Image (cartoon, rainbow, N blue to C red; front, side, top):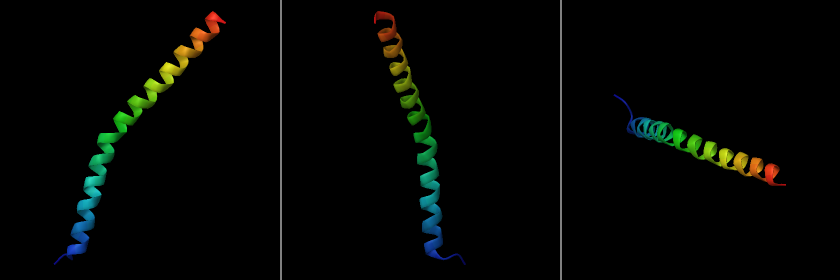
Amino acid sequence: MVSPSFLYISRIETRRQRIATAVSPCTMLIFYRETLLYRITWMLSAVYA
């Protein structure tokens, strides 16, 4: 017999893991895009300076 609180906690954990796996690629994409924009603007400013 498993306690209900343990079931509830495990359910929350699985949901959190699912959210984390869904969010991490998005955050990586956003971070990559931001760094890419920063690099492009830096290169352009270096060229036109």
